[in-house]
Structure formats: C-alpha cells, structure tokens
Length: 384
Image 1 (cartoon, rainbow, N blue to C red):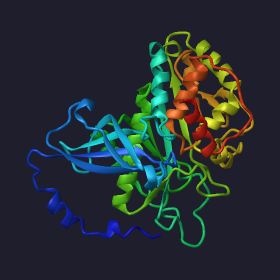
Image 2 (image 1 turned 90 degrees about the horizontal axis):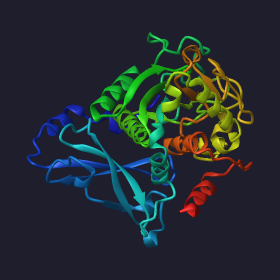
Image 3 (image 1 turned 30 degrees about the vertical axis):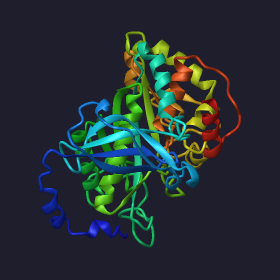
C-alpha cells in the first residue's frame, strides 16, 4: 500500500517552524463544499485579531472555475462564514471557518444546500428536531487499495473486524484516535467511534445536534478527517460501496427525534413519522446521495445489513430495514428512530431537510425519477 509523498516530509523540521510565535496575528482557514457536492476546499488568510463571532469574519472569494462552480469568464464566488471552530492543526487562537458559497449575483451556489436547509429548520424550531449521524468511511492508500489489505488477495471474511481489537483485526486506529481528539479540540459534537464490519472501514458519530447544527458539525468533522488522513498519507473515502462483492458498504445512518418523540408516549409520534416516510420513499432515496440514488443503488441491495432501495421497511432492532426503531426505544415507549438509507457521501443538509419536510411539515407527493447529480442541482437552483 502506497502513502502520499507529503506524509514523508520531515515533520520535525515542520514543528520547528510551527513553534514560532505569531504575535497578534491569527490564521483563519475558510472551508467550503465544491462543485461535486462532496469535496471540500480550503484556503487561509491572516487576521489582525482573533474572531469571536461570525460578524468578526470578513466575506472572501475564490475562483469557482477551478472548483466546478462557475465559468472562467465569470469565476469569482463569495465565501460567507457561517460557523467557527478551533483549529486543531495550527492551534489557538487560529480558527477553522465553515462557509456557504454564493454566486456572482449573491444567489446560492447549486451545491450550497445549507441556506435552504436553514430556512426549513427555522420553520420547525419549536419541535426541537435533534439529529445524530453515523459517518462510515474506508481508509485507502493513495493507490486506491484498502489500507492494510494484502496486495494480492483479500483479508479473511467479515466477522472479526467490527469493534475489533488486535493487529490482525483493525487497521489505522492511529488515524481514528487522532481524528477523534482533533474534533473534540475543534468543538465538533463528535460522540463516538468504532471499527466497522469491513476491514479498514471505520465509523464516527456526530450529535445530537439540533437543526442546522447537524450539517455544520458533520461537514467540519469530514474536513478534519481528510486533513488528518493527509498528514498520515492515506485517503478516507466516503464511497458507499468502495469494494464490490461480499463486503459491507458505507452509510451515514441518521438518528432522528423531536420534542414529541422524546416525551412519554412518544412512540406514537415515531410510528406516525415512519408512516409519513413510507409514503415518500422515492423522494428520500433521491435526497440521500449526491447522485439522486445512483450511488445508493450499489449499496442498498437488501444484503450486508441494508434494506432494498426499491422497498420501504421498518422494524424494531432490524438492521435490514429502511427505518430501525432501537429495542430500548420500543421498551421505553419514547426516544428516536434511525433512518438507515442515507449513503456515506450524502449531504447532511439534504438529508435532515428532507426528513423535516416529510415528518414535521407534512409534505407529501413522490416523483418516480431518480435524478442525476447535475439534474438535482439544477432543480435546486431553479427553486431559488
């Protein structure tokens, strides 16, 4: 397995310079979602004082023609700061800043799904929607080969790897633990991690977060993961089926609760929510991966702890269902439910918005088409 050249640079030399004092200067890294709807970009600027609020951060711009977001003849796009985190790579007082992207005319970019999600979340804030998302990912070498797998062949069958311990069962724990601590330092609401079913596959969980905070914190956790992997010279892929064959895919299971479901007797609200979701299955499948269902079609086969993409199902403690009600929730009669359909590379803004539209705003209607990413993004742009 090959690692990147940059990871082989002398880190001791780097640390010598990282210890240099910056005086009253602060480094602020602006982070945004690019034209793929999956990739993240970043660039850093110097400020003369530490920003305490979003209002302390200036808008910035970037070349959208180099990120798949504009034409070269009209390439400047706006970066609008929306959320500040501490920087675990260059340390305090430096910051990481999540940004929305606006086009030249100040309308949202097609992959900026946050602004519309924020409007929807503000409409339902009295219901206090909480989300927790379980981000699965797979570690690869820069050659695309799974980290730790034999060069010519495959590891032993799945079974001993999930939550495993031992050098023959887990690969890359250093990366996982580094990411975990970096997220906590940054202020990301990360709440757990574990090795997953396929070797070299891991999961971290973010939440509970209310409303728009879910998307903000998951996107920043993803940025930190990619940045940590960069230092170690490997790749974290969010591909929902990185290895074909008898191997588990990667999802982003989404746990959902509201003020009503968390109260005594909330199970009836959970059951009502599941009934609403059952009637909009195709809509949710479209919203749960960046290519309108095409990525998830490789993962949601009805095997490897997944439901079938063409059928809606629900059950208590059933990991082969579209919606799982945890056994403890069934016993307590209140709590949350888990939507197991979102793919690992989903946009959390799209997922949480779709759930709120169906469950809390009682939107109905379903369209049979499975849109491509370009068609879905154009559809979103047309709605503005």
